[in-house]
Length: 536
Image (tube, rainbow, N blue to C red; front, side, top):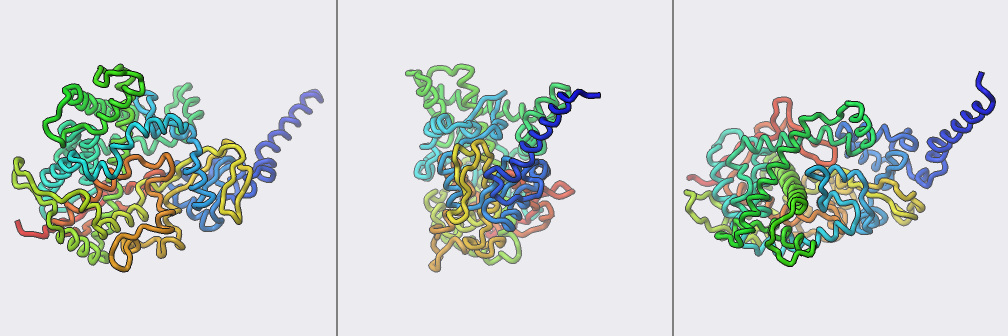
């Protein structure tokens, strides 16, 4: 029989456990003032972890906000916000730090980058190195961007679509190729970048390798301790083939860095479109920050990995978000009920004095529209903005860590004393479905971004609640490049073709951090038919 001391000790431990895991989180914690998304949320994370694992988080969390308001408790130490004042302005403009959730975005065996950096200081330093080459004014006036857009649109994309003729076209793969070619051309130079548009097999392999991580990233991201513990006992929650896929991606990006490095070392570029703009800026500023007075001195092994990790993140984010957004844009624009919008876009594009046309030969230099002209087109801008609102490429939660004595929520229902270390997040999915800001929010209505005169109207509450690129100091550094490449691609296609849907069974959103279409059981995403606007 157990001694009284043992029984008393067990009883005390039981009482402490009840207090720690039930009484305090349910009744006494400041988070107890926040309505729970599920009855188990105050004392267990299992409910929200299950939805995250199966890619259902976005609609489930949005439903909770619809029922319970702008603050919702998802787990014992996990809350979601859906408001601007006392919400995203406090958290993201306020510079709340990132947590270990972002550590999975390192590359090359743990080499960090701006996105994976947890503290503001290192992130700000890295962002200052690169922000000028991603500035809108720089991009729209860049001879490199002008050369890239002429080559990719007129010599690759439009001729390739002409080859497809009136056959069904899987446009998700087309947009992956176009977005990757655009992104890597600006980062590494056109000659050193990818050519996925004309090499669809390589493009498909990249997509498979890149998406391999989606199903398994949950484990090291949400349950890192369990993942590490299981591996010690020979249980791999992330299969080895995922590691091999990641290795292939890293090797490929390193090869692009090596090619750009040779151009950099030569000190000259014959053609502006082949200038490795971002690579050059990154390498120059990294050398300067490391105290190297000779900017063109050779890279150390660690510097080489540092550059590769940063640029891998830029390339991956650039292709992924733009290709997702373009696929949903094409889907909406090609629906029969939106035929009038497609026609209005075509009218606007072809009213320009110069527009993208397919080159007749590799040597032909095609006159193309000025990038500032493309950027200024109202209907084109409205279509892109509305797609980013309703079909944000990254609609999921963007977690931050609460500091000491935090306060969240609108002024009339704020909660004070949020415990330090609490996981706090917002999601574009919910912010963009606010009916008070975006009437008929579930409908794709580009006209909401235009005024009564047909000019761009992105002012007021729409601008405050629009969150496709995040906000604050960690807002997406490549947002201007993404807008530029998407507008060029859309302009090139719909100035020359009319599109209609053949099969869209694969266009269901994934409900997690990113929103790529899930695809159909046949392996398709979105099959469109392209009808030329002009006779050849």
